[in-house]
Length: 552
Image (cartoon, rainbow, N blue to C red; front, side, top):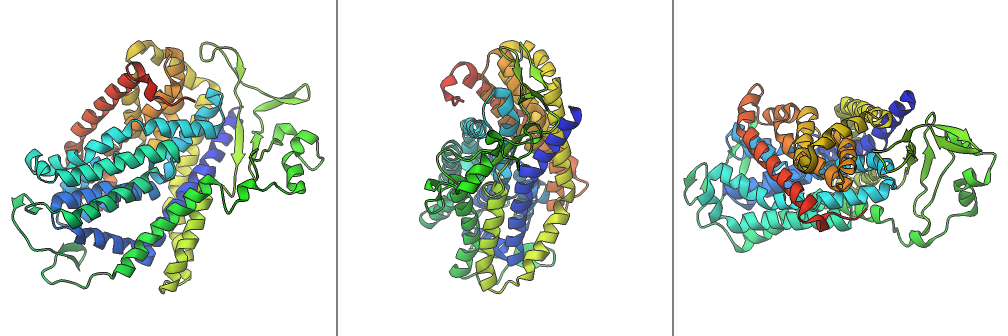
């Protein structure tokens, strides 16, 4: 049973988790290879010369976009290096990038943190993975937008002071307000995959439109309130400095094509998640497909025995994509001609004795990773038309494989550990101890989530290790498990800025390797403040405004 749990977790880490990560980073690397990423970077730098608004555009808006697409440290490294290139002091640039990265982390890399947690919680809560995975992001989307609304102001105050933040309050309000509204709307009504990408693009667009009709009275540059002429950025060796001569800007057509790459990604994933390609959702599967999908029920001789995985299903509302869901080998035994789970959960972890299912779901065509790969190929068509060689696909794929070879192994083994902990009862045993914190548990739940990300460097890893623990403790304490599991993820993002992994990424992004301690000194207090605020919010949602918790 230990081997069954370990291999199940490893398989879940490889598919669909690592598949999404590989596809997302491949798409991002493709935009870098084609030059689209540099065009977007230059377009952001030209919008304004005011450092406060550049901070909002680069660290908050664009950083959230990269978090939503790639995640795994990329947004901190990229936004920190961009800020340093714009003239921000390197250590301050890294610190600001780390703090700005809190708002989007829970939905990073196409929603991996909450998607992973949903898959782990589903059997524990007695619901299917899709239902659980919809409830969790909805709850996170009722917590983080409050912080997304204030993070832009928080950043500007840290950089320039309260008074100078008031001077650009329209930009601060538009950036935070549009992102928060988008985050709530997409997470509650669309799903976790596109929450960051759509919210970031809306926020970027809104701030850009605002700058067409409004500009700060005086541009703020490195602590000086002086009126300065518009500037552009030009390369000078390995760093970017303010140019005295105006370089030729990218044409509107080129800028549109660069942003269109991300538009293709969003549309492809959105349509794929809705599952309604040209009316296919109304078509019925062919007879042979129907027989194959039902073979576990009708005893078709071509199907494997139930204990090695025969159960498969198709959407009852019509054919969208084939989905196979089966019992994991080694976790079941035959009883009365039917597979029975080997592990039983007992009170007080559950209300009454019940089986602990260990199933695995394969959805090759509808998986988010497959949709992102398809979007990459579609986005490459205009790239190729503009002169990018076809060999760039292979080169970028090899680069992505080398870049992610160790993270993929790490993800697989972390999921393996987590599944063994859940399936063996370790998580439930720890939950029984934590339940003794009583009514204060929602507050401590936030700190557990933050500590998890501090230790692992990943909200996904923290959700994997501590999310089921939070949900089980909630059930034992009479609290809503969705609220506590979501709090683990929402509060976990506050620990991202102080995790050694992210500190190293931020330092490397600004060429300050070895000065991680300086960056930590600038951000640790803010991590503690924001975690405390999240703990208080969890207490309010648990006892004062429980109507904010979505029904599962």
